Image 1 (cartoon, rainbow, N blue to C red):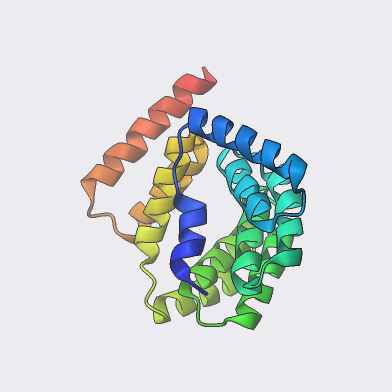
Image 2 (tube, rainbow, N blue to C red; image 1 turned 30 degrees about the vertical axis):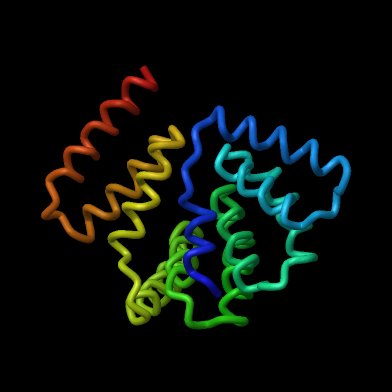
Amino acid sequence: MKKDILKNEIFTQLNKEDLIKKEEEIRILLLGNPNNFQLLRELAIILYHKADYSSAIKVYKKVLEYKENKAEGLAFLGQLYYENEEYNKAIEAFEKSLDINPNEAFVHFLLGNAYSRAGKLLEAITSYDFAIFLDLDIYGAHLDFAEKYEKMGLLDRALKEYSIAYDIDPRDKKIKNKINKLKEATIKKIG
């Protein structure tokens, strides 16, 4: 699996206007060619970045019917399920991806996240250990997710990811300041 493609699908940032414009263009193109897996894949990624996870899952399942690299596709489907808080389905998709390509550190990390959220802590630790063994920077991965969520306006999720990164390495005072600002922002948002 090409790690950069999966990470690019997850971490690419587009502003909302670009997302809406691109989604409209793709939907128009799909009217003439509804089985174009490349267009379907792009639509699923846009829906993911719009936080419309249920729709992204429906579209991406169609992509998997055509996609040659099943390991990468299953990993992205797992991430969609994870974001949609369907942790058992996420675990199943990540495990299928790793059955095909067991040496993907980033997928082991994502699997660890899903196990953790599903309350399967021993399995989560094992997955994180594999990710570390395969040289994944888990601290950096949590920061990447935190920044992505923050840009998407998902402040609660960003706060969780920054907090996890800070728990891993509490020396970075910028992260502590970021956590405090996000806590203030979420309090203001509630109030």
